Length: 274
Image (tube, rainbow, N blue to C red; front, side, top):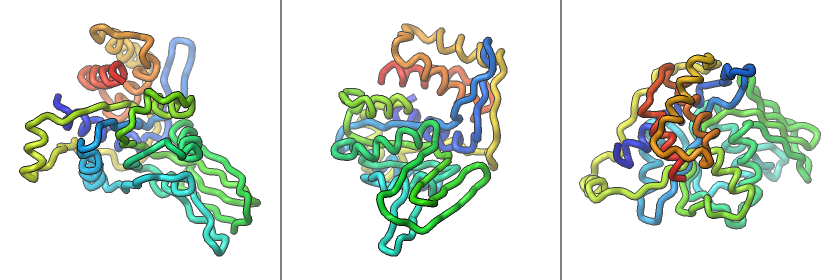
């Protein structure tokens, strides 16, 4: 698969995973519950059409692109009349959130807020100023502000695009942030660059047949097959995100409803190269 095919496939899995309310895995020692959503981190140099790629993803999945996100833009803010305006984490619930030109420089508050919103997708904060109460509910998800405190339980999948290699960051928070994502480092081929100049669409997406949210469960036998497939990857280094790899392959299974060794190998390769 070429670069755009990989991004197209992973974007489809990420978007579709937002429909997974919960994921329960039958492990040998008992059930394990985890998030069902798949997050991606697109890393490329300037001129690699990250914004163009996000725009195609946005159009296909009807998802909003938020450039240069800040903490208030992510979680919510208070206007001059003390009304609470929910942020992107709530407005993008049960869907895909696209963050363009994401930067950690001088943006530590946003990184700190994004961490729990990616996993376990909950957030709490106390305001230093007065705000009108606000309560919104969507199934088991909610956005509440009362008595100076904000509580959010949301569910969204996220694709973050940046030209910065965050794997080289010395910040533990940034390290934790990228560990929650599947990193796709890419450089377009000459043919792909020529296709852009010809005005061709870069991405070809699978059609998402999921219509409503659901709880997913992986049986012990399916879990074993996923683990065996990951372990069969040539040259697998278990010190490189092995647990995250198995987890993301389980999330892919929850979306697809069947085993796909090609997808498992693609996810494993991306984690190994991160």
